[in-house]
View 1 (tube, one colour):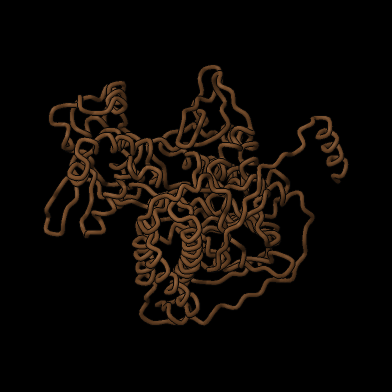
View 2: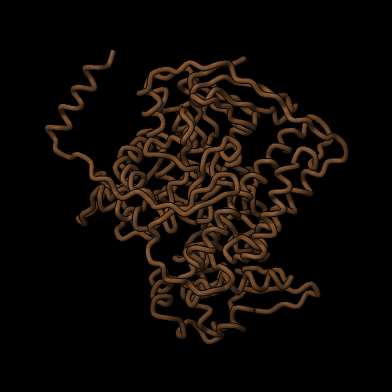
Length: 596
């Protein structure tokens, strides 16, 4: 049996950083478990300008740790300790990435240029371009490989083992052969990203599934699993269509099964549709506060799809309303296109002028925006909830930590790019805490594989049915009756999973457990959504039963879920820690004197 001090699960920004930091803190007996080193969201997603959120590091405008923490906290449903940590550690984590070679832009004097992102009162956002998280992953991976940290590839984690004293180990399955392996460990850092496998309509890359079900199965609570972010994205190649994709004013069309085509946005909204399309560039996520504004676009897109029509963004032809030129646009839309020197031509010609890379991105995935429209849907893009963790990103189970999107540190609204900051802060906090603890001994972990059914596989069919129904009743447009019915189905499937699910042979065991993860995660998410619907109703990104927002104000609670049981709890306030320098210096000396 292999044995390690700490196992990290996942090879994204959070996972690689956790291992890299542990090594620097002197913990060398570590390994990273992954079902595919080149899979996952960090390496395979981006946007027209993928944002990293940090403390302002340029210009004359003031900023502070407390101001940034207040911004994060004001999103609603955010624990005070998480907001303060993510603000206080942001510069340290950002500069670590800079030193590793991530190419964030500066001026000639070394100021890191910033811009304002969504839910950002300052200019804290920065970017390395469309693939910021990919560059981060590659830089952290390079450091990990240079240090010789062991990577156990093509292994899916299927069960976290623990006793009354904490973590004892991990069970993995080979994604190639189906062979099981039990690994002994006293700490696990779960860095599996968001629960990407629960929806049919999703922006998450196909290589990303997530591992939230591991935490559900381990019995630790989840936080705010009903809080998600959704937006318009392409479905053939999964990519969110924000920024210049919208600002060039593409034509929105829907096509019925008999081939009838219509510009449904213009039919419903007239010339207003042009300015709302433009606003989707800035306001990409669906927001119940904007259902009379830019989020009308999301609602109308979803309505067409629910009627059985296919919806596309067409960059080849101008939309209705531009026949007489650009003078009928709002001042904001007109001025933006004017300053971008793009008051001409067709959407693809404007996109070529403003963001050639946006065209090349799709070309690299076999899609020619010059000759074909993009099929779209309103898709799940980010889970703002996750596994409940404390200020060290540790769960209720001793030795089990969660970092990155898998951790439940976000609330209702979050500044764009704060998720990338969180991958670095959470994994660093976990590594620091692990390195500060004495080693813990435990009995050898034991695991018995459930009895499996063999025959004609139904794993893919079950997964498709679950994902399709989740997108139908429990995305941004939620039906309480539909969610209750689906939850009952999920509960029954959970109770009899290994009797119902059938695999063809051992090589499908990893896929079987991936399906099991989906079932467990859907149950937790649906429970949180129903509890939130009954208590809060429509808010954030959840339009419940098409009822208006209850105007509950900033959320001062969070939803805690264990299995399929949820309750509403208070959030912790912003901490007021010691800041007197002499006191902190004395405490630091005391800590140093205690070190061996």
